[in-house]
Image (cartoon, rainbow, N blue to C red):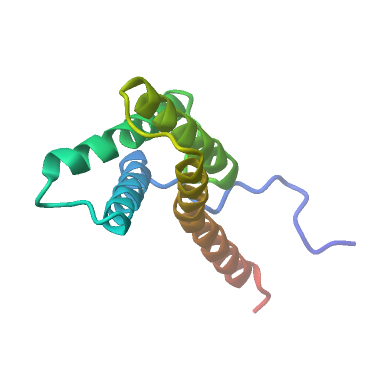
Amino acid sequence: MSNRSTTPRTSSAKRLPFILTLGIDTLLVVIFCIIGRLSHAEGILGDLPGLLNTIWPFLAALVTVHLIMLLRAIPAERMLPGAVLWILTVAGGFLLRAVSGQGTALPFLIVATLTLALLLLGWRVVLVLLRRTRRASVDAPR
């Protein structure tokens, strides 16, 4: 017989506020774009229009997906919704880059997909691990 209660457990992991989740993802997308521009010796602060031109397609896709998740009450900080958010951010970002005449070369697509996976999913993995550790310490017999 198990020591666990047979009543359904309410989630001990509270949802992160929408603005915090959006803020973390936004910061990571901006960092991704800055790293990309630096790796190609393109300007950042000295070429603010160029930086904004690089950022806007991915940021527009990210914010759109976040708003849809908010309206549907989907917890964007969780892993599965985070994976959907990552894929749609990459797809939407590249679609917007294509229609605005920006580069969409295959090597860039691969690097962007992998880098955004690391960034957008990485912090969610850390969150899952922290929540599990916290839950394990709360559930541990004393």
